[in-house]
Amino acid sequence: MLLNLIADYGNGDPAFAEVIQRLIAEIPEAQIHCLSVPPFSTLATGFWVAQLGLNKGPKNRLIYHNCAPRQDNPEARQNNEGEGLTYALLPNDVKVVGVFAGYTLSFIKNHAQVLHTIKVSRGGSQFRSRDVFPAAVGAIAKGDLSLLGEQLHPEQIPDAPIDRVAWIDGYGNIKTTIPAHTINLKPEQKVVIRVGDVVSDAIYSDGSFRVPEGTLAFSPGSSGWETSTGETIRWMELFLRGGSAWERFGRPRLNQTVTRLS
Image 1: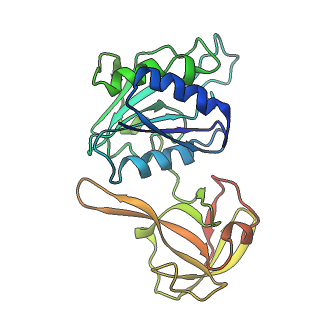
Image 2: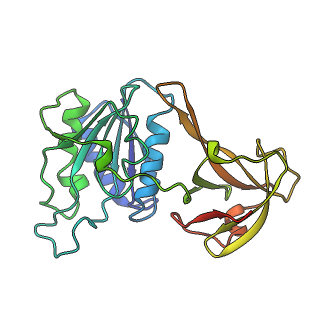
Image 3: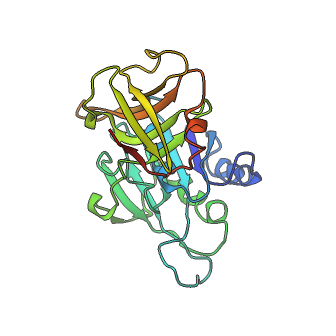
């Protein structure tokens, strides 16, 4: 089984090693891949749950995500309680187990065949993803669904915003949550984009490399997936050929607003 572990522990954080040990104790055959998202970034978590879960891969796959800001209740916590655990089954039979917080389920809510809470303690440890949740992950990985609780409905889950920075890749490309099908521009048409407080000219391109060196492109990016009905979903990306769009826009943080001014 390929197990994608998405969490906001931080690159190189020993927390990943601790959680991996617990997961392998429950699922010895698991091949675990770790993906670190920024602290409390439920938007990035949800984006990657969908990107990894809805695209092609090994048939035997599970995604375990943990980004739990504990923002569901502003009052003092009892027994380290936080947001609850959920289970989703995607159309390609990929299993998804993780904390329901913010936008973690927003990108898959209209694709999942099954959405349920999981009957597991919401407290008991500051480090629930190591001490509490792996046993439930292991049971579900083995096909034991006895822990499933109430059904979740898409309307209970917030919609993903369609104007945010979703991710910054290693080349400084800015992946956004702007759906490509909402953009009605002609190739090489000039646009003005604001990310956070920084404004820059850009060129609309239907393919990132079809712009000259040093030009900022606004184009459908490499992220997206095909739905079970055959619809292709793509997300717009800001790409500076030969440079970094992230640097051009003053190193914006994830979840900052992206606005097309013209």
